[in-house]
Picture (tube, each protein chain N blue to C red):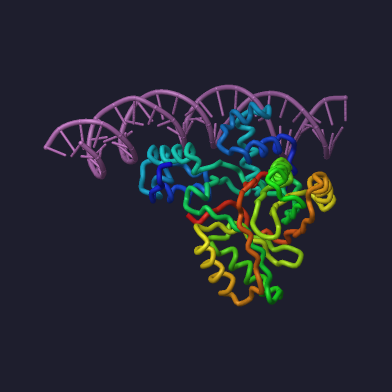
Length: 153
Length: 153
DNA sequence: CATCGGGATGCAAGAAACTTGCACGATCCC
DNA sequence: GGGATCGTGCAAGTTTCTTGCATCCCGATG
């Protein structure tokens, strides 16, 4: 993977804020021509530096006003059990984010649902369904203070 | 806010996966003309249904390979203290996401840093700097099983 | 029951943005 | 110093986006 220079990083800083800015404007901001900007973007997309280009949708607007952070502790922590848990969390559409973490708890999930009943249904299906969840702790978000995928580049 | 119909939701499903798909292709996928698709997208952007259009940058690629989930407990939970904490978390560039939550812990943060020393420096500056953090629990992500902002629309 | 009005649609033309071939210049390694 | 490699800017060609316009649908009204 080609190392990133200061131009690349400047472009990324702009794109992670707004990936619809015209290449011409990006070029003007970073002192490069539009074609040059475009070739750098292409390269970074091909190399996976830019993992995806997405629209950030408001949960409230689509009827998913609840964001819930859940820590999960498993009964069995064998590699197979861990993998099975990863798969089930990855496949659950309510799970927006999932991390396998160090410490007492094994997983941290960010879950987006329409209502508390919907959340309960989710826990029944995903947590109790597997039989391998020892316990989980539910933290309901009262304020999404900061969300997004912004990195300090 | 205009309620969303099935066309809008179909468009959102596509855009939250790839917001660079040409309107013509979106139109073909949802059975609408390109101009119609574009007017719907414009409307949803104006109404905040589409909150942002962003490039998702790989943390590894830009030298931020560590993702750490942190739960934070405050000493004082007065409204002023809560607000001050929200501000400081929001302003810290290492903090990618922050939620004010119910339960024993007050905040859950997702922090992206270059290294453990960088994380320690972060905790000193942001947690110990305020004098209002009673305790925090650090969970280092060993596997970012699922990330992103995808919603089940 | 006919008519009117608001809103969304598709078409087509015009505008803007993206893409690519090409020649030039910088850099690095003989 | 010579030559290969890589990235750059320019300009032309292509695609996509944007917008004016006529039409259609549907609900409200006379």
